[in-house]
Length: 322
Ligand code: ACO
Image 1 (cartoon, helix red, strand yellow):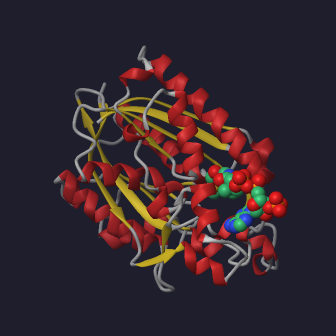
Image 2 (image 1 turned 180 degrees about the vertical axis):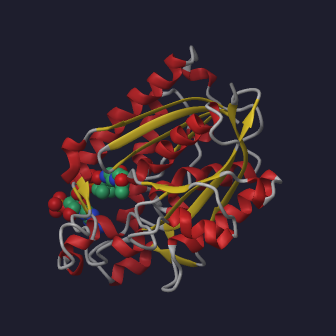
């Protein structure tokens, strides 16, 4: 049986950088409040004519280059996104067209901020069972499109971007294990109520924007991330002290700190991009991974714990030998 290896990573952030101070003229907030409560200093915002698939393409090209593969080697495309270009076809199919690849499967995964963990789980199963041997997996999001720019409790939290990995079949792991969960009973803690089957009128109302009970999400995130980290370690007979790097979903620095503390990991062993990127949902883990691989912190052989929590509610973790 084959194992899944991360052969290369890539990231893309839109050119426009929006600093906290810019929100001070939009809503009743301050740079100080945003930094203190979230750790966010700035975020990137997609241009008006820039789509999720455009960002996915840029990240994908960088991952393809880093993995030193040819586009023709790719035999499956997965895109994790909650902000697709179109209702259909999937953003993965649009990305496939941009890349000029034909006759391979391509599909989207929709698990909000846990999208990267869900897609990684699926990709790993494809490779382990021989269904694919070279997967392009991208997390890409345009949350600026589903933010109510008049709602201070959500508009300061999110950013746009894309992160990509090339996953190939290898003789040694690679991905040691993945663990994904959901509990739909918490649907209304974090949602965009509008949708196609709810009727297009809703899409022209406040229902088209993110609605969140931030405080409740915060508490659930902290306790759940602790539990899935323990589960991933136990599944591999590993100890928390074996972890070289924690690469968490980047929602809030306080959540990340709490997760690191539970693992006895100093913040220096935690990859943090929330200050620069804010919460880019499905894109946040692959973007963080790419930043740390490229700046040399994450090295081949390192043990990585990836973990995420998001709308659904959904959550997941993975242990990866990079
Ligand atoms: N500026 C100033 N004040 C603000 C702002 C703001 N931007 N936002 C909220 N406040 C106010 C609130 O109105 C409230 O005021 P009140 O006491 O007068 O009512 C006060 O600050 C405290 O509000 P809380 O919600 O209790 O603040 P908290 O410390 O919990 O921080 C935050 C809010 C940052 C949203 C935090 O709860 C959080 O990060 N939650 C988790 C978000 C998250 O992780 N989402 C998950 C993933 S997203 C996805 O899946 C798509």
